Image 1 (cartoon, rainbow, N blue to C red):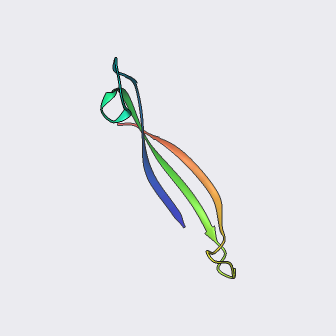
Image 2: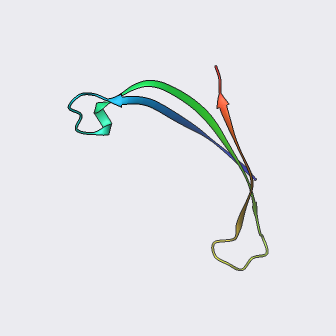
Image 3: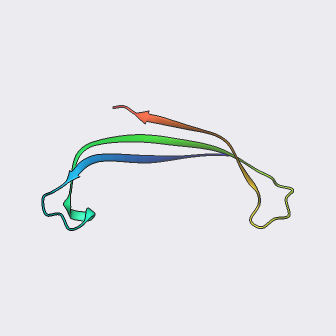
Length: 64
């Protein structure tokens, strides 16, 4: 089984006299990434929740 998720990394700085992250962070750059995760689940396990193994990961930079 494989999952893919999109992540967005933003860089920037706080505005002068900032009081919080929500409205006072000035974004200066942004990059997007796809994170792929391959997992294997042990179907014969008796544990609850079932045992899950991470078989591999890949981080892919999105270029436009």
